Length: 451
Ligand code: DMJ
Image 1 (cartoon, protein in one colour):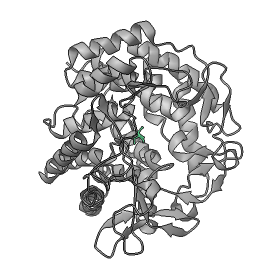
Image 2 (cartoon, protein in one colour; image 1 turned 45 degrees about the vertical axis):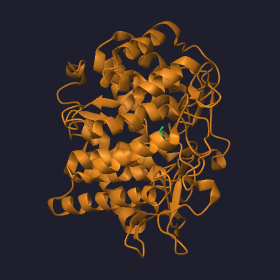
Image 3 (cartoon, protein in one colour; image 1 turned 180 degrees about the horizontal axis):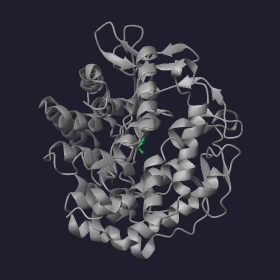
Image 4 (cartoon, protein in one colour; image 1 turned 90 degrees about the vertical axis):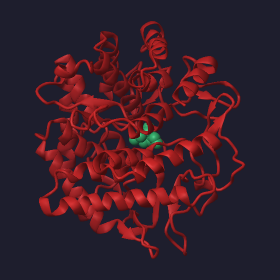
């Protein structure tokens, strides 16, 4: 599947950001501020890990010869960090090849002006050429987004490690300081924060979109520090406790889900994005107090089960963008606009973690169901495509092969069927785009080569 996805990208869209597999051309999009080759950089480590040597060399050669960082345009700080910086850092650690390190550091420098705000909380959009930054037009009152400024920590610590420049670590430690200082409604973290005043702008809380990877990076910061970053662990534990108290619910049919919270009122909806949390909670269970370990493993298994149900209850056996638990509905989309599946990884990501942490064979079976469904409904003549409605077996394709399909979905599926020592969870922490970064056992450099 990876070879098919890559070959078609190479044939029809090489150097563009993503493949449009129906029209057989490339897509540039507006998230990466003039950067190109998102699929190449996102796929590098997956190609390497899967031992697709020739394909890896094609990708590397593009990075060496054609990857231009002198660009202008509106880039998402978050997306550039998780896909490009993350992908380059990982490939450096896997191969030891300097070109990946140098590109990661050069790009990291270009992101720094986004932090020039009164609080040091970065704005969401940056022009990589001029360094001008601003907030997303859709974010209320010029706010920054929790999942965006909260998903820089892992990569920025590695940028400091590899450059010797403390500025990257200082920037993300300051974000943590601001978040620690500010009062949290009922212990919850709202999704919108003003980079000017440092106050919350709106009380919307979600473990799905807009919030998700902030929580993920707290527990992973602790893991990546070889369990020394106890502040991150405390923030994670406190946040999870509040989430459990206020957002975790059980449906009439017995399915555990995480609702969204709007100023105290619950929206009984769970996004596909929130399904990463099964894996996160299982990964975090290890550090919990003895009497809570099993509880968190059970909670993780229940959430993963619910997410599997969202797949199992559809006709294609792929899950919708969001599913609901209201008016008699359980784990199904009720709105037309939420029925699509864009090749997202979060559900198989949780299967992979649950498999590694429990070895219950059902997670491999569930992963295999996804493989079959992808082959049946998303494979088209020239690549893989998202579908607009998971509840019909004659799917309408969206004509997009997302770069995260190669970075994440296929990598997690592959790892689900590998031995545990391939990218062992003891030694590697996956960034939110599934790019593994080494745990700081003694120092990061000790892990500069996987071989
Ligand atoms: C990916 O880019 C990352 O996993 C991110 O954290 C959330 N969205 C997509 C995949 O769905």
